[in-house]
Image (cartoon, rainbow, N blue to C red; front, top):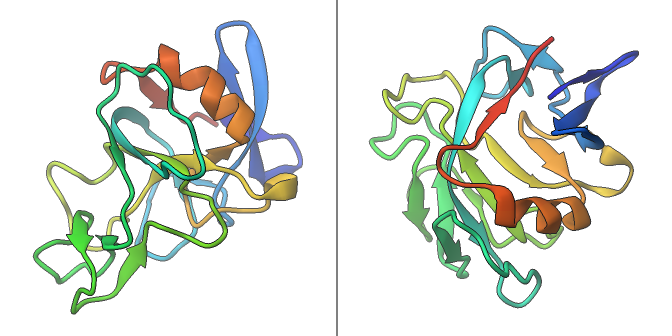
Length: 167
């Protein structure tokens, strides 16, 4: 995955011989990822697992552990919280992202291993591979593709798959 020439918040995802458009963070690709900077990490990130909305996205076959998104699933984004960059049950006391979103970006959402082990305070949370908005508008630091591309990729992905972000 690399940035599209001339637009740092859009990218080109290469899968074998196929190239697909994708959205990147509003801050473009960054080698020094920080919480809230909107940057997509310059890194090789394994895909760990995924979440999906049963009522919106059919997963089909996948070699990844995939869990349904319930109304009580959140993701903690507070660096000082003990559950920073981890899933949490909402309501939750610290600031968190709601996984069951009205904009449907997380109808299919894969967790990348950015800042998971070890977790470092302030180095960025909730770096996902998820669905893109129309027009591939910027993410908060994630990589996003169309639902069609995600559905095509899911059967091919496993915990050994690495999403490599390059310049």
